[in-house]
Amino acid sequence: MIELDGLEYTIKTPEENTSDLVAFINDYCQAHDIRNSLGEIIYIDKNEANPLYMMMFGTSYLTTILQKLIFSAGSGLSVPDSSARQLLNIADAAHVKRNSATKTVIQGVVYANLDDVYAVDCVITRQMTATVVTGTYSLAFHPAFDVTIPVGEARQIVLIAEDYGAFNISENTVTSFDDEVPGFRMMSTKASTPGQDQESIASLRARIQRRAVEGTMADRAAEAIRSLDGVGLCTVVFNDSPTTSMFVGSRHLELPPRQALVLVQGYSDDMAKAFLSCMVCKTAGEDYPLEVGAYSQIYTTHANQQIPVWIIPPQQIPVYIRIYINETLTQAQQTGIKDAIASLSANLSIGQPITSKMILDVVAAAYPDLTLQGAMVSKDNADYSYTVSPDNDEIFIFNLDNLYVTGA
Image (cartoon, rainbow, N blue to C red):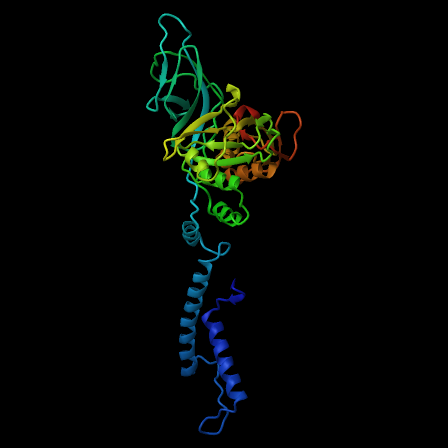
C-alpha cells in the first residue's frame, strides 16, 4: 500500500477485486430494490459456473493490472517506496549522481636530490608508474598530477591505483617508481586509503532523503565533491567565527576565522571547481606541516583569476580486532577470515565507527558454517570494546598483523 497526497492505493488480487465487485452490485440492487423480470431482487452468485461471475472475474483481472500501474506510478514519485530503477530516475531529476566505485589512493612525499654540482630538478608526471605486488596480484599506481620538485626540496604526491577496488597497503611499501627518475632521491608513503564499491541503492536513497536538511553551503560543497568520480567521501567544516580559530580532529588542524577545511577521501581533478561552485572562501592547509598531506588544486575563473583550494586527506588510523571462534582453525582459514574482515575497508568512510557486529556479519557471510563466539575492537591494542570510533578527520585502515583470530 502506498499513500500519495493523503490517498491510499492498494493492490488486490483478481479474486479480491471480483469479490468486492459482486458485493457492491448485490448491495446496490438490494438497497435500490432492483428486480429481474421474475420480480426477484437481482443477486449474483459467487459461482465459477455462473457466466456473469466469470465475466466479472476477467474484468477484475484488468482492474488488478490497473492498480499495479497506479502503484508503480506512485512509487516512481516516492523516494522511500520507489524501486531501484525508479530511484535512479528520481536521482536524475533531483540532479543527484550515484557515487561510482573509487580507486585506492596513497599519499606520499617525494624528495629531490640534495644540492650539488650534478643535481637536477625532479619531475614527476602522470605517466609514471609504481607497481605493488600483493600476493599474486600486481597493482600499478600513477601520480594524480604532475609536479616539479626543485633541488633539495620535497613535495606532496598522490598515487592512484589503475584498478578499482579496496587494497590495504602498508606505509612505505611504495618507495620508488618503476623506472629511474632523474633528480629523485627518495619517497615516503602513508598507508593506502582503500577504494570503495559503487554506492548502494540504500545509501543513494538515504542521501536523497537527507538533501532536505542539508541546506548550508558547506553541506552543498561537500555533496558536490562527493558526486565526483573517484571521490569516496568529503567533509567540509566552516569556521563562522570572524576572530577566533578552531581546531578540528585528532590532529588539531587549525581552521582560521572565515575559512573552510576540506577533508576528502579519494581524488578527482575537479574538486576545486566543485567546491568553488558552492562556496567562495579561503581553505585551510597552506601552512600545515608536510606530514598532514595537504595539497592544493588551482581553479581558474573566467576572469583568469587563479584560486587555490587546499585538500586534506583523512588521517589513517590502524584498528585492532580480536575475533573468537569455537573451532580449531587451519592457517588457511585464519588467513581467509582476516581477508574477510579487511574487506570492510571497501565501504568505510571518514569518521565511521567499527562495531563487533560488522565484523561478525562479514565473517559469517564468508564462513557460514563456523561457530562465532564474539569480536572486540580497539584503537590502541589495549582497551577493547564492542565499538570504536575515529575522530572526524580519521579513517580506519586494516593491517592483517593487527587482526587476531582465536580458535578453540
